[in-house]
Length: 153
Image 1 (cartoon, one colour):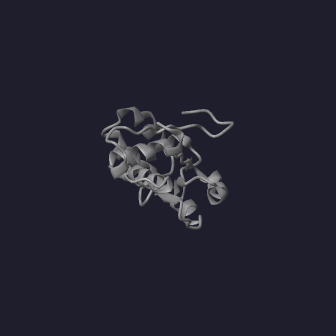
Image 2 (cartoon, one colour; image 1 turned 90 degrees about the vertical axis):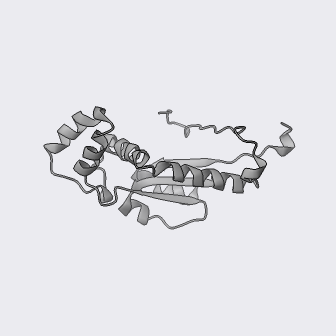
């Protein structure tokens, strides 16, 4: 494709509480922040920002129990947290990255993850002055690059 017709957009996806300040200054066309409800509500709204509050009314045990039905591999984590005081996920993930990963899996299980990425795709098209009608079906490429100093998952 001729370079005069090629547009690029940057998407920053942040998970966890240490990125709130960066979300405010990011020059990306789309910024997505996944974090617990308290952290997400503390971030001021911006036109390029998609805030995804995690946890809702769930506790660690309610979420892991629901997830266990379709993901038996979470059993060791569920067994571990059954021995601890229950934690309300809307106020944090106990600084345990395993819980954050499970919350994302749970979003997918409840079909709540796909609409977030559909909204992201629409905002990318808007940012590069495109529309779905201008994109041939199945002819688009999404490329993800980790932030400098991080490694891909």
